[in-house]
Image (tube, rainbow, N blue to C red; front, side, top):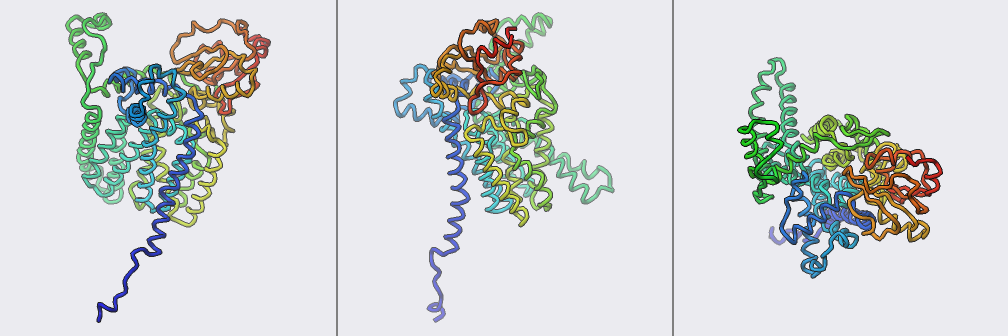
Amino acid sequence: MNGMNKVRRPWFSSNKLWYLLRTCLIVIGPMAIGLALMAGPIRRNSATYDEVVYFRLAMDWWKSGSDQAISRMGSPVTFWKWQALPALVWLEASGQMIKTNDPIGQLPELLPCFRFSALWIWLVGLFGTQFWANRLSGPWAAGFAGIVYVMGPNLIAHGSLITMECPLWVFWTFSFLAICEYMSHHSWKWLLLAGVFGGMAFSMKFTAVLIPFLFLAGLGFENSLKWIAKSPQKGVGPWARMLPGSILVFGIFTLVMILTNLLITGFATIPLSEQTGDHPWLARRFSEQWAERFSRILEMPLPVDWVGFLTQLRHQQSGGPGYLLGEISNSGWRDYYLVAIGVKVPMAILSGIVLRPILIRDRRHVADWLIPALSLLFLAVACAGSKRNYGFRYLLPVAPMMIVWLSGLVRTGAGRIASLLILAGLAGTTLRAHPWELTYFNEFIGGPEMGRKVLADSNLDWGQGLLELKEMQSVEPEFRRMTLFYFGDVAPSVYGLAGESFRIDASDQFDHLPKRWQEIESDYIAVSTSLSDGPWGPLAFFKPLRTLAPIATTPDGSIRIYESMQIQGAGLQE
């Protein structure tokens, strides 16, 4: 009788329906918004400076198997392969690959395909950010984190390109997710996962070499908190006894990270030096015996990414042209990245960073204190350690984990109200900037036009404005009688620009440029902002343009157009 009185539960209840709808809203909603937003910059931006190199390398690698050139440049050999692989497979399967005898000539048609191909990594990053936020603060935090991830103008800008920024921040985020879980549960599983993701991050960009040291600093912070809470009166002895365990964890993590990178690169090796036999510069500096020993070291095969990393270290030490607040320097500034945060991060996000510790004071998870602590430490290292201030993008590795930290706002009523206001402000910001997120400057500084006076470098002009200039020539035919001074790594004629053009790259080769502005016979002169206001090109030639107002700019603000008479009449012939 008791069995007959049991009530059968329906296989599909209203609770299950609500859970399904909520999951779809939280997961599919941000994904759909993000993909819709990504389509704009993918199609509307011409090739950025770095993309030209990575696109050419990907095509060469697919056809010949050669990939050593990227290591000689000081970059990893993996990130561009992972981004380009879906596009390369599609070109091969569809029979289009055989028609790509001139890849650079077909760049306008093929590059959007490669950018769409790379979106799978961006989507993995979205999943990781939401997964982490859900573990810390629940499903609504995951929803908040997902929307901020897909609507952040800087993540849209660099997530839509085939460069190393997006792959780095994706695997950096997964590594620190696992680090936080390890420090919460002290599970070896999480430690090994953290090392694996750290190795993957290093295979994307060498900035990830900082991850083990940030992890060690986090362990040191944790030990200090334990020591302060339990036995500060006993001196530093208890803290010192915890140090060997932290160093052991650091060593295991680093070893797993190195092995992961070696596995990803297939244990490929190349010598440090491309030259074999005589090394005259060694002979000039050392005795014959020592020169021979050093020669053997230079010719000894090393893991391919180690060679790339050592090359990058040399680049970093030599510095490079940078621009900040009207000044140009080859050795950088300590406050460059602080200024970049102030003008490139949306005001809604900056407000959230201020409000988060005020509204949410509990530290229920390790990540509640570890994320901001290590993000600040990373910022300090970036400010102190780099002589190449090339853009805000160098801070993007910590962006997703800071989004996860911000998502903790949803834990309280006041925090939920703040989170809704943040989302509304961010939506307005992004819609105003779209699809020119690459040139985004926040409301505080006044957008790209005022931003060029602060950071006239790749934060504003990375060579992406050719498509918009071509459209301006179509709408205003008189602009076809134009001379273009373009900063980039592809000939403007590839994009069908009319008129004469002078391409300037990061080298110091300027012999092809006219000596005086009066030599230019066209009616209009267009100049990349990196040249007219920034640190590239012959500075004395372009510097006078900073005092002239252009008659037009491309919609993204990356190229400025002047009347030739305007320049020549101002006496700017020097």
